Length: 347
Image (tube, one colour):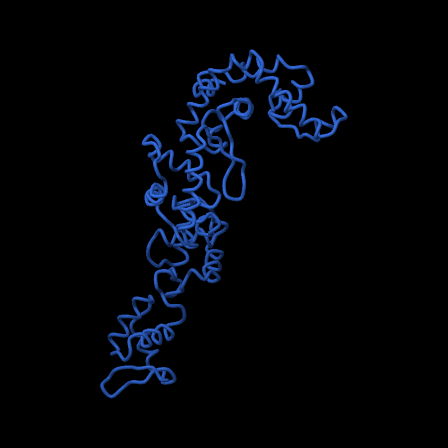
């Protein structure tokens, strides 16, 4: 309770108790059960309450709605006006529109106290909520125009993301700001914008704080291969699979057995084997295949080259010795040495 009082300036349980005492007993018990306002914070379903009283779930819903209507016309409701204004101030301070979980957790971590705050939100006139759907989390707002602007901006922001995008938080916030129009300067701060981003179910953040499409494995990490991708990407250069395993444990505090990590790297098309046990990201431009395949790709792109030129280009793709490249060039099934000492592909 002290935590909630610190954040709200009032005592939610005291106010709710005053409100409920003005109701008939059955109406009071229904609201206490539905919102978890009694001894237990567990919220009871319409069906369970109906069985208790021998009535239908629809009848329970009618009792609930009628009881809320009675409370709005009660003297206790008018007496709670200061509390409603304080909750309105908190929502506005959090950005004017905020996810329900973020709002309740901001006020208090106590489940019972959260239920009492939620009840006041449902009852209070200033507060409107947007239902959870496939695109957005359930959230509360006090300004419909602002809520619509944020929702539309989130949709446009998502539409501009590709499947593989991983965007640093600062850049993501800048992009988001470009999609928002005519918003109050008080909302143009990082914390508010991050809260607004969290409303979207389509946009997400990975453990490294990079943003992208929420369904992408680069954001929604599900296993070792996804953690390996993030670790190698963050490192910025090829790594041995043992180093990848160690980096996963260090960066994400997650157990990563060396053998398991190696197996996942082999199976994942995002990685390219560039040396003995060394892996790079395909998106860095590395060519897949053995050294011979890399030589063939180099000659296909560049035309005839000297051995030194070929070695230089292959070593940018593979962590091997120059002699390994020279040995592969002797394969007359694929390569031909011209009179001027250059190498070409055999067609």
